[in-house]
Image (cartoon, rainbow, N blue to C red):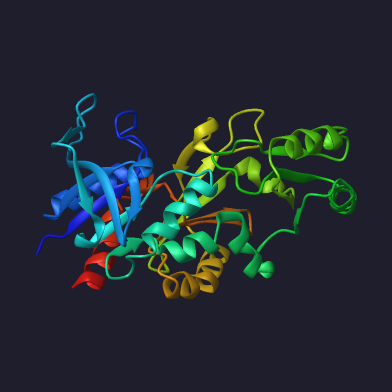
Length: 313
């Protein structure tokens, strides 16, 4: 029996249909007989006990320049839906967090993917703190002296915003760097959040591996290789995706974190592994489905829907 599926996502018009994971999830849902409804996060509301969204019935197709059709705009009660996808991109700011509070009022009667309570409590760069044996030395701090001590201890570090995304604001500070104080001044002038620093892992020159887990089980990986002269491997900033296999260490990491992800309703997760080290656990809006399918032939979207359908069955 078809499910009623709502997609809370960024505007669908500009997406890259050959790379966007939400688009691939929507295509697979439609192929399985599920109906789609689309709205952007700013159209979500809570009113007098009801969780509402103003949006459009949606059809999708893999046709560049003509990849979607919208029905008439309508306001709906999301409690009437079977599944809601929480798929807008970070930043993980108060706007994002507020949507998790609102959607949490109807979950799990309406299944929200991923579970909004644990999305809120497991942002990408913080959940890894539960697994210190799997991660490079890590610091979360705002105080310059504390960050300077960490850099002195490890020499070569990566410094980035705690709630950033897509490679924005990521800096490598090697032993000869003299910019820490200036970068700290820049960051603290922008917001009141701490920064995260990690010991630099030289293996990043060979790639930053994105490993996809579905319902706590590993299904495959892609490698993201930094552009020449870059430290960042994110595809948003020119990283090149390539086919890659899973190592014994990759499987050890996945076996360690998988049970927790499954227990907390994190159905679609993408983790980042550099060399032998886990650096992020992405639960907010992970990517990589289309690249994995292209390289390995693994239809991870179908596996995601199988997990969802089992819960709704």
